[in-house]
Image (cartoon, rainbow, N blue to C red; front, side, top):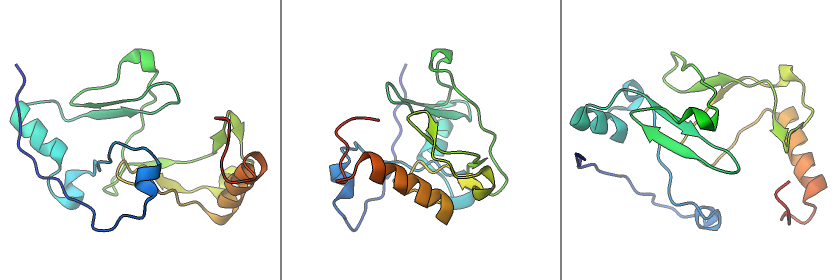
Length: 148
């Protein structure tokens, strides 16, 4: 049977307009609870006894977020270990767009925080310029007519 849990959500106090234009249904942060106190996921686990694991799979064709379990193997998950910094961190070595590297050397990148609660991307200057130049070359008017 399905167990319901009561949870409180925060709300934003400023709307830049970007959130609406991105056609997003919402955002949720999944910080490690020792960093910021209890999370919605912590409360769900306590109320339902679900395992202490979640997974997120993002792709162009399909996406999945599973709380208390893992994505189906058919989605070809790649597991990333968490760090002791209180965030989900990975060692970034490259950025690819449409299967091609943007060309910034691996030494440009540093530890990267994967944050489910934001739409921002911060990059070192050289990597930023490579990504920016890619979009300028492929979308010269600021809006791509194709997905690649």
